[in-house]
Image (cartoon, rainbow, N blue to C red; front, side):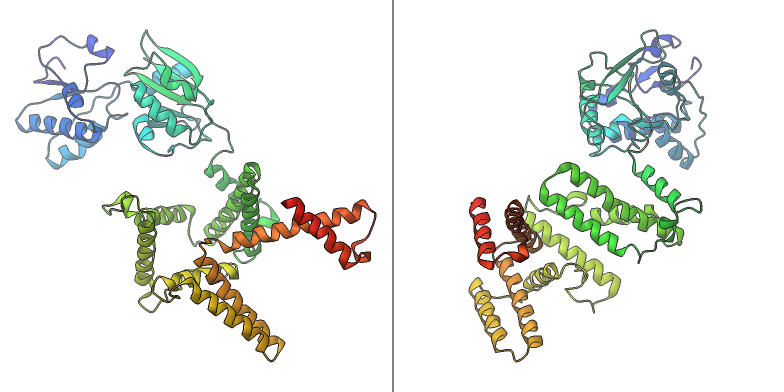
Length: 462
């Protein structure tokens, strides 16, 4: 450093700068940080200046805090560019921020410690951490960064989760500050040498933990029942768990919903592990395809499509992209009705079919046309010549009624019918309770008495 043609500092706002050799050749890049709001722009300009200096024949020394390959985006950006320009680079390793932080925390990094950039976490919408493992987040250099960081982390960790802020690790001013997550941006000690330590949330709080348990259950030393399952044998459980989740949604019970979502997720994890065991695909493939699909179908977020807050336009774009995807996969012979699962509840399929064809103009001009068609189908029920034919006509009427619901703005006929069924359940439960209170069997009651209690149940609802 003393013999350098030019000594460049990424920043002079660090206590180590006071210990450097005295020279007139210090060139700090702090002015670049002040001139740009995006770190990518900062890193690009720093890299460009260093490469220009080397091309001019200088032998520049670039000094960074800690180790050049720990938390130094400019260095990792510089190395391939220097190689392309045939410029030799010598790296002199130093002590990173990690070792002093480990000493302050008195923990072993090999216990699964995740080391991440707080700026990347703060800019995300959900933490990129595995909550079943501890994490050390560097560059919590301001209260503004800490504020953005805690908002992201609180998507995964409780607001009161106990964390530690590490200030000036490795210096005489080192400080460990224990506090709840929601308070980290209130610390008066935050500075350029602040990091955040997140302990393990708990061993069973991550998606990876679920995958490990399922893989163990499916292993030769695992559970005989889980080992013998196949994609086909699990079909009824998938449907059952989906309906139980719908029931939890209808009851507006968060605890029940949380449990049923776990049961449904179990089915996905089991199917995926079966696929892994059979060499079909892995969970990474499932997640990658899903993420790619979400990005591809939201060009107004991830590309340059404008929707100006129009949710209807978003829905149309989604359907257009889906059709284009399907056409690419299977050619032009596909129907516009393809993609609606035929195994879904029949009422829902009828509704979706009618909605899909309506988008290409195959629909009544107004609701009166639907009503007229319902009257027509009603008449055909009574003109049918056999019970079998009459049953088919009733089916036609149900299909028309599903269309009518769409015209009435009912987006989910299945939820409507579940509410009707729930209403019937409650009313008949009242009838049962009345008979039970009198020590009577329902089969011994007259229809008139049962009807009277039924009407009482209706009045109580009102």
